[in-house]
Length: 133
Image (cartoon, rainbow, N blue to C red):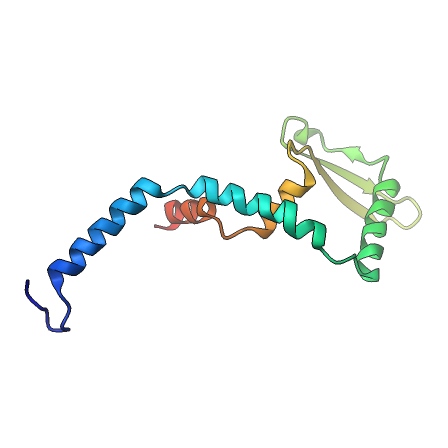
């Protein structure tokens, strides 16, 4: 075994590195870890979230008012076969124009929140690495 200029043992460190790589290959379960993190968020974090503030409650109320105001919005025909439907609404009184989008999700709100808040996942890291190298 020889030492390099830094005083490291090349053979020993390389052997340890190879062993750790093999352990990682054998025991790596990134999908399971991501799923557990999201489940923990839904089951442990969300139930203990603080109540919404007055400002947050007003924002939610405003979204419901916007939804009722724009119930008669006209669908944009080019979006009929897309995943997100787009609508335009023009308020007759003042000419205000609203753009509205709707999409149907096949997951619950808790799952969506978990995906938004647990963003540092192995899945996201893998996608980033594939895209950016």
